[in-house]
Image (cartoon, rainbow, N blue to C red; front, side, top):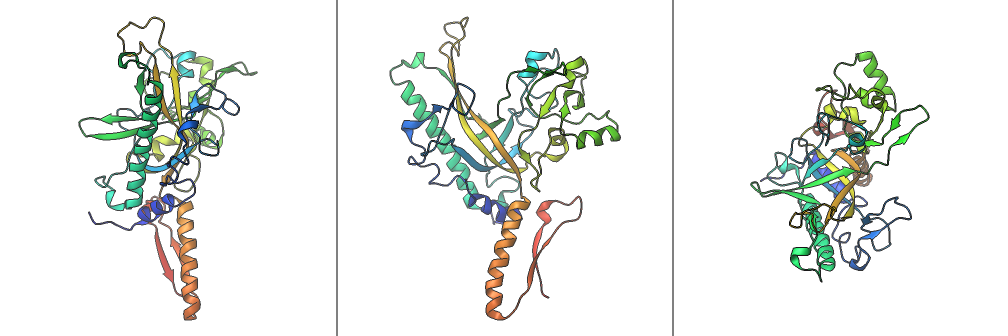
Length: 356
């Protein structure tokens, strides 16, 4: 397939060369020492789980591009996220969460011609690293255990066997326990994807957009599941750090119109493992009779691509290179960014030279 050096192509290159990119050095044994990982970080993370750290002891972050799948089997981005459509109560709401399904970039994708080889290599490197880290943990912890006594494993990824495809499961950071606010309602830190209620008037919708505080009763509710929550409808909804093409935070009620299936994104995640004990009432031959190890990718940041930040870098670099050439030639043209008209896609942006 012939490569198209489009804005997406060029900005994926900037992503690959930006600080924190998943380079070969970033995933080396030197940067992710086996003897230090995974480990609890109770001093600055208020939970008992284990995380991966780098050679300096700091939380390990992995940054890579991927393709957003909003319709996949493992995506929880609908009106009710991972919850049932009936019988919502406080305990169920406390466990509400969005789950993004991210596919590794592949040259056979609809936009595959716009992917530089560096981006494809990065995704291969990400998957290989996750497999290696998982195997290291399982081999070390199961070394003296019979195979039939080993804990079940829930991987960082899932597999579509028929298509022979892998997909990453990415969740925003965990919400805390519910707290009773002075106002008298339950405040549940809900890291989920609410959507705008179509019955809300344009005036009310504007007030929601201008407000920093979104409530459950503002969410899209096609089956009237939220309408019977009474005061729980005042529960605050927290937005994960998902940014649009211009670097602006997408509040959760905007996902329905601003995120699209197949969007190329840059995701920054940390790696976490839950060591889950077997349930007391688990049957001897059940899959969780020996407990389980649940591996998770926790979202720190997700940026839609192409984005203005990398576009500005491209412009800055282009100006610098052109300036050096022009000084030799005694010329001083300027580079300008052709911004597409309202409603056009950022793929239509072009770098154009205007001679003065």
